[in-house]
Structures are given as structure tokens and as C-alpha cells.
Image (cartoon, rainbow, N blue to C red; front, top):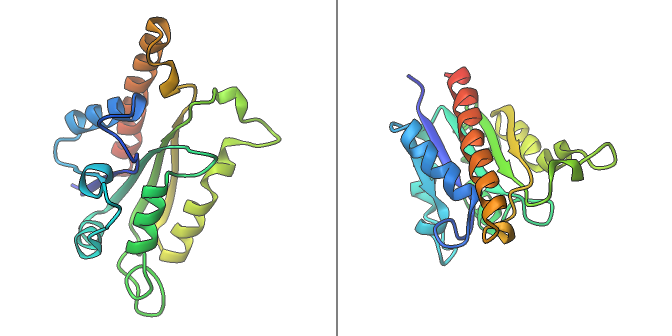
Amino acid sequence: MKKVLIISGHPELRDNSFANKIIMEDLAKLLPDAVIDDLSALYPDYKINVEAEQKKLTNADIIVLQFPIFWYSCPALLAKWMEDVFVRGFSHGSQGKALVGKKLLLSFTTGAPESAYDAAFPVDALTGRFVQTAGLTGMIYEGYVYTGGVSYADRTDPTRATAMTEVSHAHAKRLLEKITSLM
């Protein structure tokens, strides 16, 4: 059985998330053997324990990054985690082979509807930094699971909240299917 590491890059998962919180709660139930890494709970001060995070990555076969898109990129907490943890000698460079062959899967949400991403700016454009990181580190980029239109701002509208809850649960199920296909 392959070891799965799911990293939540949401900066306030418990208190300021709607869709990502549901997705992570579902994944914890659906994949009880997976290691769940909630960066916002572990590092509210953004002071990353590099050794601990590198150990988790080393032990994993499949690495899932779960996050909302903020201003066409990942949240600052996830970016900081990557900057601190993916260092020369660990993840890349002549001696950095710790991630070679590991599978990288993205799972992300946007507040904007999926229709906001079209030929002029496709959703694939949001994945560039991760595709490049996989290439540099020798990881195998396995694509993404994406859900749009789950804006935290809509959480107080009962109709929207119900719809967002349903698509968030569906996202978690699609992600489970993708992870299972990689095992």
C-alpha cells in the first residue's frame, strides 16, 4: 500500500474556510491511513519545522497539495512551506534526490466560478509553479482535481452554502478516486 501525505495549504483552515475544510474533513475519513498535514494548525506563525516536514515527504509515496487559489496562486503559507522545505540538497541539486519518483497531485478550489477560466486564461495556468517544481525535484506530476465557485463569501447564503457543501463533498470523492488510481 502506498503512503499518502495530504498537505493543507489553507492559511486558516479551521476558522476561515468553507470548501477546503469540508474536503479535508472528508479526506480524513475516506483515507484514515493518510498523513494529514494542516499547515495552518502546525505553523500559524509561518515558522516551518523543516526537518519534520522533510521527513513526512521522505516517507510518502503520493503527495497531495490541497489549497484554495488566492490571487491566481497558492496561499502564502503553502508557498513559504515550499520555499523552506524544498531546498537544495534535499529536493534538488546533485545530492537532492529525496523526492525523486514520488507522485505529486494538486487539489485546489477557487471562489470564482469555473467559467472564469477559459481559453484566455485556462485553469491549467494556475499549476505552472507545481509542474516546474515536480520537474526540478524528479517528482511525477499527476495533474489536479479542481472545483470552482466555492467562495467563502457565499457561506452565509443558505442556497449557496448547500450547493457549495455538495460540490465540496464531490471534490473529496473525485480526489479519493484519483489518489486510489495512483496506488
